[in-house]
Length: 484
Image 1 (cartoon, rainbow, N blue to C red):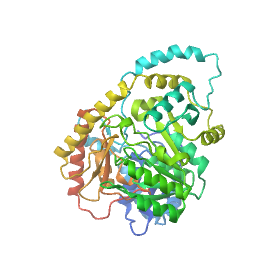
Image 2: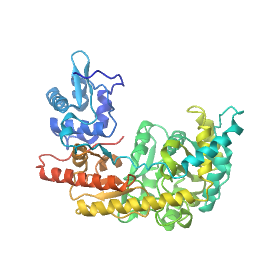
Image 3: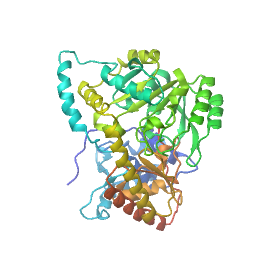
Image 4: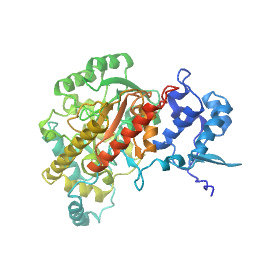
């Protein structure tokens, strides 16, 4: 039976052309099969959701500057694979997130293993914290429930943790947000606008790049070597030459590489930011997942060196549970005041009950986080063992913390591998998602946030997918996708 048309929006030809990224460049453009594969990857990455209506053939051909014949052939292949459905008078739309052809490849009785998300389950102790928060909620029911700065008890406990780690903080320097990404967007919108440059690491967190693009700012990448770490000299040069309005760094267990900046480089970087008078968003989403000990025993926060130019963001998503949807901003009282004034245009605060739950979790003496670190360490070792067994040609540096390995592949095949892996029942984000202009085809991020048995099975399937990619003659360069 022909699928119904879901009404979930339409992507324009110009927007789809942007999403297709480097496929459009004359030096890397290929045929209909490659265009179909690039569209398929957008679907697998979730950037073309189920039901999205596609532009007309003529509109897309004009946007991509190719013939309608090529567009028609690509759509024919997508329809044959079950990824796209069409109806006369209604156009074409995304009909399946997986494609009909891959059902015969999936192991019998097994579902898709998602390695695109680095999100662990809820931390032990969440239910007792919920019970305690229910009792504490009674004291707030007589209030209006709007706390644009956040509950003071939660801000005090977050401030206490910063102070323990070497960054003296009071509650008025903290604002609660709806996750770290919400915090990033709030700061980005306040400090940068259309046409402004934002200095970023390369590779970096894809959603940060998405937010920079949505603000019509321009990301300026500075290479981050997976072996040697941050090139502070290169950052200094980029600050001088590009004069960015803002910078973004993940100094603790960088996403995706897992690297951690040492104290000396933090001091040098902060000095460079001071000379350039460039504020920096410092993302500490993963800082509590230190697999070598308590983060309080590690290098001081980058914000301790950066002074008022450092705006630190954090989150409970990786350390406690993403379902709480809580994050925070730590900055000077002046910056927090400006953020609060600007916040009224976006939202009016974060949920009271979830804040009470997190406040309870942060008051257990660190026992729950210590258990989380032990579990994560075991999963990291399970993933490295599986890779050494099933994918011995892949290389990686075992990170001291965080939630993912940044794997170097034996050949530039990350995007092709991501497409093939879906056919073997594994969803992964190709290296191109972590680059400003795509590329990174020799790299693949693999999180270790699933149970050990699922990690072993996922890597086994990835090994089979890699073998199928390697066995296929390369008639064209791999498709790369630009993250905007």
